[in-house]
Length: 117
Image 1 (cartoon, rainbow, N blue to C red):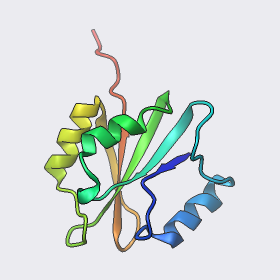
Image 2 (image 1 turned 90 degrees about the vertical axis):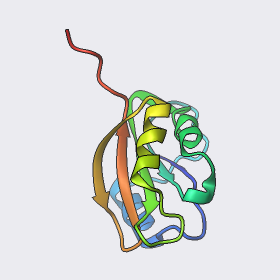
Image 3 (image 1 turned 180 degrees about the vertical axis):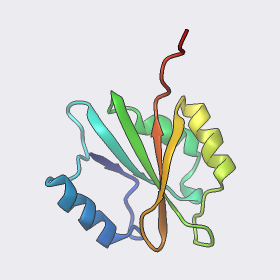
Image 4 (image 1 turned 180 degrees about the horizontal axis):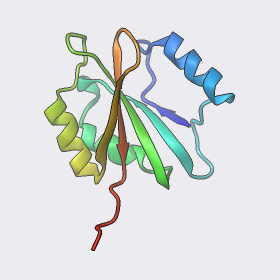
């Protein structure tokens, strides 16, 4: 799993739990495609669509992005409409959402399935 957007405000307990579950360290400089990207994002980090496109750089064709954003009422909260617009811009589809800690929520983003005929 590649981690992007880490800063001093991330939930360290959540990071530790994820690392324990993975059984290995996060990838920072990928030398091959990764299956998953953990992207920490706040509203003042810039254009989320651009951030998602950048997160796709090292992602495998079947991989997914876990976008972690601050919860409602927290500094850096990302509006759901901004999230939906950014996903569309990046060519991604919103999948599962989860509350992952007291301060952070997660949204899984995937490449859309091919059109069925």
